[in-house]
Amino acid sequence: MAVPADPAPRTGLSALVKAYDVRGVVPDQWDERTAALFGTAFVQVTGARALLTGHDMRASSPGLARAFARGAVAQGADVTETGLCSTDQLYYASGAFDLPGAMFTASHNPARYNGIKLCRAGAAPVGQDSGLAEIRTLVERWTDAGGPPPPAHRTGTATHRDTLREYAGHLRTLVDLTGVRRLKVVVDAGNGMGGHTVPTVFAGLPLDVVPMYFELDGNFPNHEANPLDPSNIVDLRARVRAEHADIGLAFDGDADRCFVVDERGEPVSPSAITALVASRELGRRPGATVLHNLITSRAVPEVIREAGGTPVRTRVGHSFIKAEMARTGAVFGGEHSAHYYFADFWNADTGMLAALHVLAALGRQAGPLSSLTRRFERYASSGEINSTVDDAAGRLAAVRAAWNDLPGVTIDELDGLTVNGPEWWFNLRPSNTEPLLRLNAEAREPHTMRELRDEVLDLVRA
Image 1 (cartoon, rainbow, N blue to C red):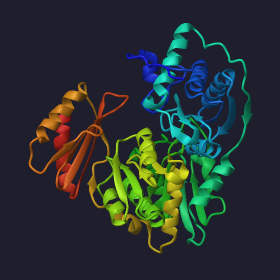
Image 2: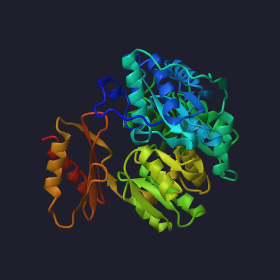
Image 3: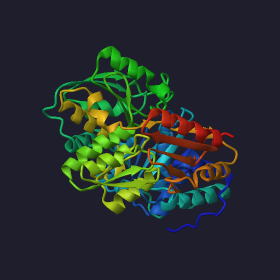
C-alpha cells in the first residue's frame, strides 16, 4: 500500500520516527497504544500476511511488543512472537523464515527509552526511504482521528516460537572453531541481551568464558550498554588484565554490536576488526566486494585490496549499507560503530558472528591478539567527537571554505563533509536527531592527527 508522506511531519511522531527506526521515551513520547498503531500501519504498508516480533530485556519491551502484535493481528496478519532475543537473533528469524519482523529495543539508550527496528522478509531494512515514512504518516493520521482503522475481515493469529538455539546453530555453521587452541574470554554483556545469547552460542566451544553483567536488567545498574563510550569498557579492560585473559568482548544493549579488547586490556578499533574479518571472508571468496563506511580507517580499503578484494565506500547507517550489500553482492561490510554485515546472514548486521570470526582467527595462531591486529592499526585516529552547534550548515560551510582551495586536498559530500589530504583525512557530518556535528579525523602520524583535529574543532566551535 503506497501512502504519501506528509511534507511537514508533526512534531511528536517526527521526533519519534528516526532515519532508520522508531525510538523515544516511554510513556512520554509513546506507549502501548502507539505501538498497536505501528503494528497496524506496518501490515498495511508492507502487505505482510505473517510477521515476527521480538524484544529485549527493558521493562516496557514485552508490553510494547504484544501491543504491536495486537495491531498486526487485527489487520489479518499471523504473528510469531519470538520473545526475548537480540536484534541479530530477530534478523536471523526474518531471514530463515522469510518473514518481516519488528524488534523492540532502544539498543544502548537509557532505560526510559524504547524503540522498534523494522525489517521486511529476509531481514531487508525498513528506513525513511523504504516504508518508514509511510508508516509514520498512517500512525499520525490515526492518532489525530482518535483510533485505528476498522479491523480486517479476517483476524490473524499469535503464536510463540523461541529461536535462540536455531540462531546459535546457524552462526556456528558459518565459522569453524574446531581445532583452535583454548581461549580465555571475558564477556561484558552490560546487563543486555548478550547475557541471553552468549551462553547458548558459546556452549561447547573451546572457550573458558568469564561472564560480566549477564543478568538481564533494562535499568543497566553497572554501566550503560554502550561500549562505544570508553567509560563503559573500563570494567572489562581491568577484568581482562586481572584474569590474564586472551580477549575481552563487550556487547551493546540489544547485542547486535560487539567491541573487542586485547590481552593487554587495550581496545581494538572496529576498523581493525572490519579489516580482520574482511581478510578472512576474502580468503574464502577471492576477489569479492567488501563495504566500509566513510568513517572507517584508511587501513580498511588498503587491507581489502591487499587481500585481492574490491573495497566500496558507503554512507554511515545500516539501511544504506544493507542496500549497497544487495546492490553490489558484497560478501561483508563494516562500520566504525562496530556494526558488521554478512552476506551469509542475509546482509544483516551481527556482532556475534564478527566475534566468532575474531575468536577463530586468534585461536588458530600462537601469538596474542595484539600481534594479530597490529597490521590493521596503521593510522592515528581521533575517534568520534561531538560538538553542539546552533547552525550546522553554517559551520560545515566554514570548514569547507578553509580547505576548499588547498593544493593536494580533495573534498566530497557523500555523507556530511569529507576532506582528504595526502597523509590525513577528516569527516564532519550532522547528527540525524540532535543539534550536533560529529568529527572523525585520522592521520599517519599522531601529532598530525591532533593538529588536524584541533584545527577543525576550532572552526566548528567558533
